[in-house]
Image 1 (spheres, one colour):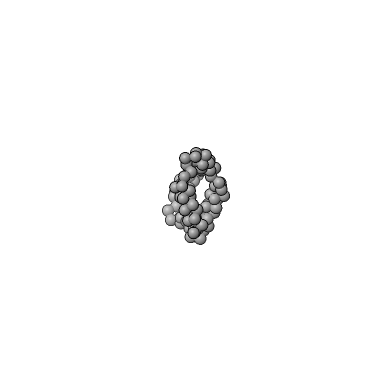
Image 2 (cartoon, helix red, strand yellow; image 1 turned 90 degrees about the vertical axis):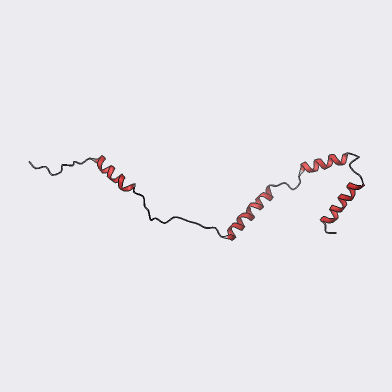
Length: 95
C-alpha cells in the first residue's frame, strides 16, 4: 500500500494560511490626498455667511423692548440724550 499525502487535507489549515498572507500590510501604497482651492474656500465662507444672515432676524426685539422701556421713563429724555441720538443719526447717514 502506498500513501502519497501525509499532511492531510485540513480545511482549517488552508484557511489559516490564507489569513497569514492577507494580513501582511502593503507598505508602499500611495496615500489619498485632496486639496481645496482658494476660490472654493471663499465660496464656502460666503455661503456660510449668507446662511447666518438669513437665519438672523432683521429686528432685534430685545433691544426694541429695552428702548421702549427707556422712552417711557420721563427722566430719560433730556437734551443730552436727544443730542447724542441726533449726532449718531447724522453720522450714520454721512452728514
